[in-house]
Length: 399
Ligand code: NDP
Image 1: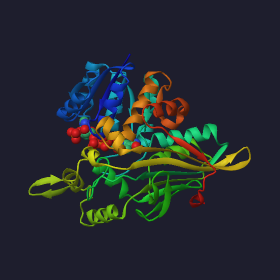
Image 2: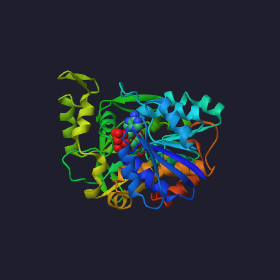
Image 3: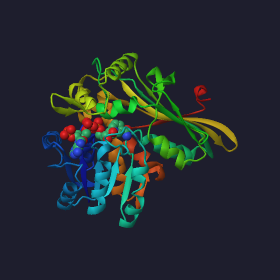
Image 4: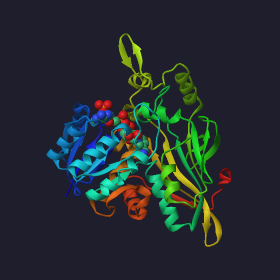
């Protein structure tokens, strides 16, 4: 008997709505709320087995959120709006007594800067309120963090080197498109790269470090080192890690488009005046690029995301690889969205199931790797993201 509210009706919100509805024996009352109510209604209409209530809400406005929470009385809020809304939604959860879960850390609108400090600062207030806030329960962050916790629990006495590897081996047959919100995606990729080494953060130019990596079921793909938010919490929670890096694949053509977009100023987050109206170039760009939600139909191929870890077990060096492959077509057949939204929405739903069943909990603000990884990984496989592991793999590149 859990009442759940989903905020955000984009690609990820669509998957969460489908998956929550598939678990209607746990989530007995479901509401989908977002800035544009018609999008919520369209998603609710696709789901036949249960009735999903819908509502309009501006999640930048704490008072509006509180009013909505007080009328629906959710136990859990799954925040799959944009990272800009994290703090207002957390604030409203505190005021209305609602547990919180998201998939991306807070980012100020006027500054492309990802760090957990803003959300970690809420720990004492959630603790005093007796509420749980779960941060970063998508795939990366999310499953990758839980894979790391699982490795630490079962396979290592000490983990030393962590490489998170994210490959989209799919083809959407468009000249240029991003797989999730273009504004968030381009902000992330055009940032300087950064990785953790022996207690320090080493900064790189964007896409400066890259190398060909092999992905199971996909093959070799050029992979680029970039900063990703889970690195910050993982090195904090697993202090034996000496080096932590994040790699993502990009095609040559994608990077060429990105370079042009940047060179002509379209990736800028600085507002400009156009014909008397203030516009933000990257927001305008988002409006003309393909909608990530509509890529699914012709998307072929798979994603492959996992963790490659080197460390020590029983005095011996060990290497370990744990990963999931997800087919874009299978995701589309089930939920009408492509694999990137699917691999985010399924873990968010699984995290909410962990909270609803009392398997995860505790008062305060937590990153997902702080919880028991076993029940989550068992459940996420059942919910549509089976995972695989392999030992003593050739991870020469990590040295
Ligand atoms: P979309 O842009 O497709 O959807 C975002 C939704 O949030 C839209 O429905 C949008 O409304 C709504 N929204 C935006 N601002 C507000 C507001 N002020 N009030 C209410 N609703 C609002 O994004 P995605 O679905 O692709 O991504 C959702 C989240 O998932 C993002 O935070 C993203 O960073 C995260 N993510 C995490 C991943 C992970 O692995 N951890 C991977 C991919 C994404 P409208 O329709 O009106 O624009």
